[in-house]
Amino acid sequence: MTTGDWYKDENFWRQWGHDWELREYGEHIHGKGDLIPNTCDRIVSQKDTSPQAKQSLDECEALLSEHKRWPDRMNQSIDADNWIQCKLSWLKFKLGKSDTRLYRSQNNITRDPYISFYAACAVNGEWKKIQGSKIPIHLFTPSVWSWKKYLDTGKDKYLKRCRFWNQAPTKHEYVKRLRELQEIAIQEKM
Image 1 (cartoon, rainbow, N blue to C red):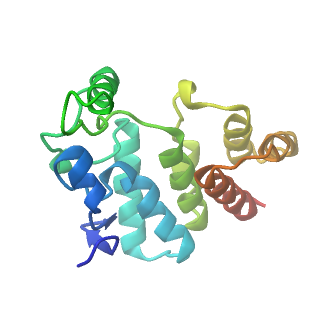
Image 2 (cartoon, rainbow, N blue to C red):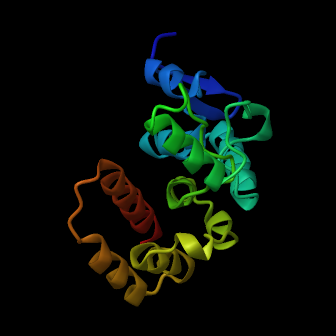
């Protein structure tokens, strides 16, 4: 495999490590921090409704219920124990007091795994997985809150609010992709 190539790791999609990972962390992480978004994005982009895609969704759901970015078997010695340790390690690295830094913690969950998971569930018609799952309240933005309410209820007022908030300009590609995933789930709900 070469840098950037995708590969299957049981029911997850990972990306072969990049050289910058070795320079920053001292080891390859092979995309484990984006394990759920990458796996779910592949399901969405390929419109994969196979039994294996459903197994992948089951495993992603289990991770999200534990607020984990990756399964324990992928833990490495370079993983931070918590957010504070990660930030302090980053600061020491930036100040030149350390040659490498710690990778994020396994429990440093963000909203992108939830958004990609719900979009993949919508493509697979797994509405119970969406309605049975909750995004931690500290991850809510107005658009994410109204989008989740729309997926749960199907009420037009939430759809209008979500689309209102999502029309704000952004220069970040990852935000654009999250909005695309939100729209895919909306289209599946309609």
